[in-house]
Image (cartoon, rainbow, N blue to C red; front, side, top):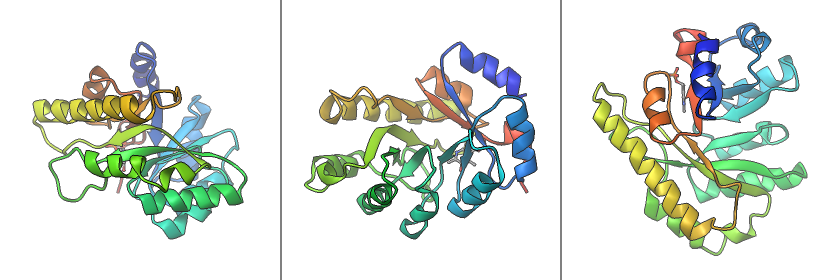
Amino acid sequence: MLTDILRELAATGTTLVAVSKTHSAERVLDIYRQGQRIFGENRAQEMLEKYEALPKDIEWHLIGHLQTNKVKFIAPFVRIIHSVDSLKLLEEIDKQAVKNNRVIDCLLQFHIANEESKFGFDEAGAHDMLSGDIFPLLKNVRICGVMGMATFTDDLEQVQSEFRDLKTIFERLRREFFRDAPYFREISMGMSGDWRIAIEEGSTMVRIGSLIFGERN
Ligand SMILES: *Cc1c(COP(=O)(O)O)cnc(C)c1O
């Protein structure tokens, strides 16, 4: 399965984040041995445990909602945080990045789904943050793009239109705030059920779990 996905992604230059949440370190190692080096987790402590147990050339991507009091667990090693959904969280990431003498890459998560439960900015909220007084002071975080999750539905046109919305937000933010920032280039969208649509709509990173690891309990 992994090789099939990678073959399709290679044609578009899309990055695969293999979502290993709930699966054991041994399962991750199986996939690692097939060549995969980028893994995604949605809980800070689970990610820390796997980081400690597994080879150090793995890139760990945090993809789930992150509480401010958990940032310190992952700040020393996390490669990128996909799920920044508030200024308060970004300030804490910056603070922990300073402590670790590094810059932490982040994506802004947007609420694009037609569902209550998903976290994320709306466009006005992100605009307020990026044009506010505090954001320019945060020197140890680097905003590299956007992330979003489409509605869990069989209606593929709806999913497509939500991904299109995220791409539009990305392009507007790039024009307004990141014109001179070549690192602002990531659109993290697409999961096991909708990754092909996401790629058609311009995804640069897909986050795929169950297609690679099987169903979670
Ligand atoms: C679990 C998860 C995924 C992967 O989901 P699958 O449907 O198993 O591919 C992707 N993104 C986020 C934010 C997740 O929490």
